[in-house]
Image 1: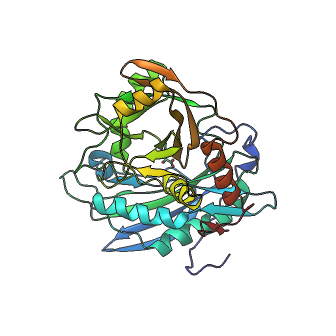
Image 2: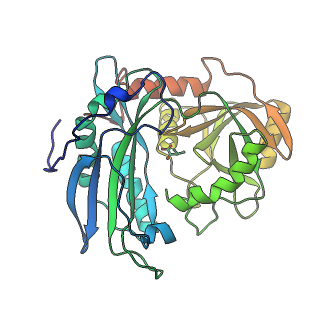
Length: 355
Ligand code: COI
């Protein structure tokens, strides 16, 4: 691995690796040995370092805890049969972090710091990248305010951290979703497109109500008319109706610009699949469910990968989707993405970096 930034490393005294049961990985519970840290003060990013993963010491007056200046990313590294470790589209995450930062009045992080911190951290904790199919190393970069000040204003100081976790599947089986037409996740002019903590906090209560009714997730609709499908709480969503792939556009600023979403769209274009980036009306979805023209519905996200949707509730009526054969678009795209992520097939868009 070629490195250009000298990042000092404090190594953990005793790795926790031998304690980990790699055959039974839940999502996001086990954290690897080290983390990358950088601080922002006096208008610049400084004090770059890799140190043992450990609790943070924060003042109770920390501004992020009160006013939510906190953004994050999610991406994954994979180990293939040759033992190589490959990271998928990290540069896209570096760019999206800065889009979120701009919306939340936070400083941009130079892409070089993001990429070098990430690659040097994964290189150090390489043995934490699982090898079983379906498992990966989930990488969580995040940035938050560090001022200790109770007035409402953008913080002057920030911290950026990357830590990693070996993970299994986020969804171990197809998901059941409910179209939400009362609660609002995001509305035009809001922060919906930013990967910021508050968007997730606001979604918890409605999602919990749906979980009590037996659903895994909500399908959010637009905040104004609640008539157009936007995305799900943990992933973007795609529908295949009469051979055409339909997914919500991102120009309204209410939808997260998913990197898996972008990758699926790119591959669909490469394959000349009929594709429409447009809002699907709730009524149109219900009609397609009623008349059997909804061929596939699935979520797309880093954690979720390609998550098949088994049941959809619309206007109080629950529809069961037929099981998907191996030639379904969602399964073909999953195989193609896995092939690229594991370095088994060509990578025409240069999405992979090798650690
Ligand atoms: C991701 O897919 O990386 C996310 O941040 C979503 C979250 C549900 C884990």
